[in-house]
Image 1: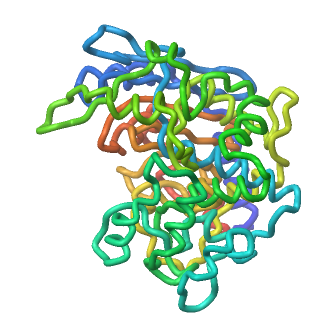
Image 2: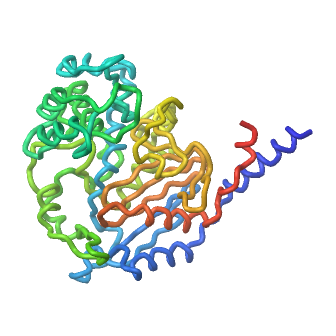
Image 3: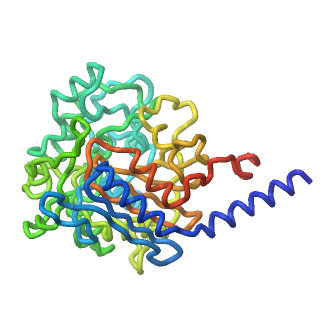
Length: 403
């Protein structure tokens, strides 16, 4: 009888989730408050739910000093929201049988044969889930120092040279033993080149962006798009200040040799929603099949063994594990200040505080755009609370009690 009651509660919880009603006024108010409090200069949010656009709203400015408002046509730097696009490209090649997930990385990139590891070699699976042991910038160890000196993501070199430089560096830890955010997705980009025989950007454009009609998404933007670019803002001494445009021009308007897998794409909110809708649709959008539904499910499943307890900043994103280029929610929010969300959602974000998530339970995808550094997780907390309601999922649900 007790199990029957729990099962009934579980079904009721699913029914409630599937009938989530968006409160447009609440979302509008939260976006406006972000700008009014000068937490950021401009924001926009787009929600697709139940097979239709359910919400679009914006507040503030793409360029506050120029008086140019945030809009659907605003182009923003998405930084690490490039990573799921790269993972999608690589997993297309997995579907074609070009590699196996547990292949040694050196089978496809021979330069990594020289990497000294304790235990097993780096696998492609490690590269997909950030357990390879690579660094990603400065840090407290000699391995971090060596990474900075080698500068493997210098914009003047290509992915082949990036891979050669990285393969000469020491690892932070034995492959598969820890989770640490890393240059691994740029290694994924190099794998795409080697396995497909195409330049990475050409492959992504031909097999992901063009089929999805993501016409404003690219590493190098046409000069005419400069007028649509959002300015970058940074909090300095508690004050929101506009940054110099030189960095944006160098990354998105200069003909760099580096086309990074982990950053560099710029996009509009509508374009990126087309990518999110493809994932929500099990790999298909409007007749364009990008991935098999089973592949999307594989990517959006937690691949971290419970023994991988060292997870760097990942716990700050909620009660999550990690799949292939996505964080994956594995339990409801456990505390009041944790991001709202549904078990089974998958998501990622970008350095300029952008965010997207896919919520299969509610048949919903959300894209949130802004241009603020350093990364501000409180903006994500607030937009999620606006979408779901501040109390959503805080208590343990029947499904958790059944486990």
